[in-house]
Image 1 (cartoon, rainbow, N blue to C red):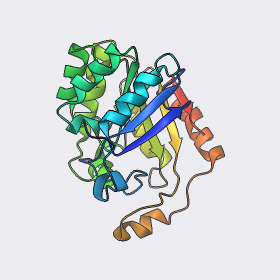
Image 2 (cartoon, rainbow, N blue to C red):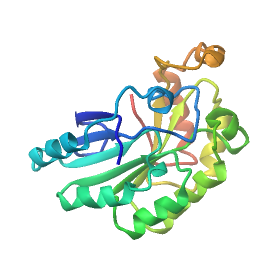
Image 3 (cartoon, helix red, strand yellow):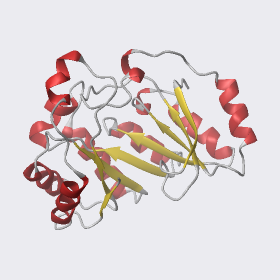
Length: 230
């Protein structure tokens, strides 16, 4: 595996667990609101794998789990063997993904490599490519979510409530999804790094926490397991 970033201790990235978060470089999407853009196009350094593994060995019993996020981790061919290695060390494992590679998610399930999944859900089907760009496909994300449901996996779906999404958009998204065990609404925060061509979109004022909370109450009519992450 190749990692370009690490958070050694996190209380928020793995529900109910203390976790280390590892960031893979590279992504097949190109969202204007991405907060990890340096992992896509300006990778400062690749972390030393020996140092990472020495750290994880020392933290056995102190850290509950390891989260692999990105970028998009499913682009890396050795993702599953590395997850299996982490589990052999006694760690719970979590994968953050944009949901674009349902075949990799199925292999993770078949290998019993991942204990918990978080799948990003960017936009309603009619706006998916316009917002996620790159090689994004609403159909593949929906297939990924259906695979997780069919195989009785522990997972959540996450949407960043960017100002370009209206309440009708969010309702459409909630209707397009099957009922999921946990639907997380994240507030939009202006990214530090962004493309110059996206300046106009970046400048649109974000929704307030109160507005998002009001959206959530409406969305519970369609997705009863909505939660807010403020």
